[in-house]
Image 1 (spheres, helix red, strand yellow):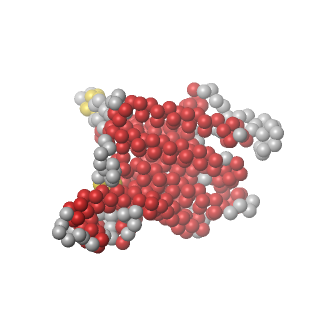
Image 2 (cartoon, one colour):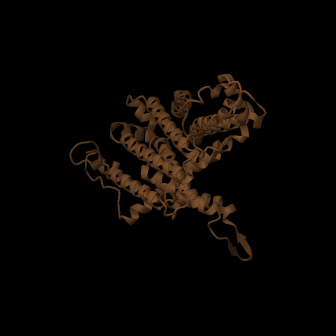
Image 3 (cartoon, helix red, strand yellow):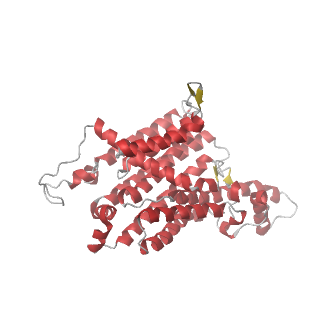
Length: 407
């Protein structure tokens, strides 16, 4: 019944499964080598960006909350899993040499050696308090969910309770992201300041596994997370709950007048989207290999809004389409794949100009294609908005609401 009401869900999951199968068969891990390990990692990272785009579309496209700070949650998820990756990898290096000494080391001596190895680069030798659970994978996985979720819960409760909306809320989310990034740039933050966490691609206890296979594992994990996130988001935006958050987006005052707890609905969507962003970040940065405070800069969250707008906000598959398209095109331009063009003696180096092209594309889409790339898909499929005529709006016979939601 659910799939029948949302045919795009089955199409999306089928395309995602075919994509994952194709990457698997063409990867270096399977011996074909048609896709290099580095490009396989890029594809895995793109799947993670698609997941955070869905999270962004939930709060902006459906609830009408233009958050310019969602990459803060994305980065925090990366930091949480990065702490375990650095700690455990360092322990596997330091512990054998200490055990080889005449006197076996105490647990405190092992921890001090690990701390000196990790934080020597910032002139410290003690393990900060926030690294208390860094040696436990289950604890750090829980923090991947809890830290972004709690930050969003506290921030959202304060903002929504004060009924901050519109551009003022966008500025507040951006200020939150900037404040967090500036704090993490300090060595006293306990996360190695500007150096960030590095070497995350070296998975502990998998030293005998090639990067080709590790990159493929992350593609599978990222694809699974994206599929679950898409199904969850589709379920949330359908039915009564979805109608309420759309109502909040279109006319918040009227929904409040009807007796709905608007702040509770907004807080739930905001917190859930932050958790989804944190999970996406936890899968992204082990593939990227490094995370530093620059990843949390407000401009990254602005790019995220651009991706969703280009894809078509208010449509989950549109957000995925926008994130995947812009991510892959950006990698092609910034990675030197696009040849330089000389016009009237001036050479356009796409490595430097791709951001200008991205901004121009955003402006053009906003003016000429408000539905984004998903609107172009509508044109190709000759789809039109369902004509209401005298049809009912609710769940009664003859209602066109199902047809509208399926879009």
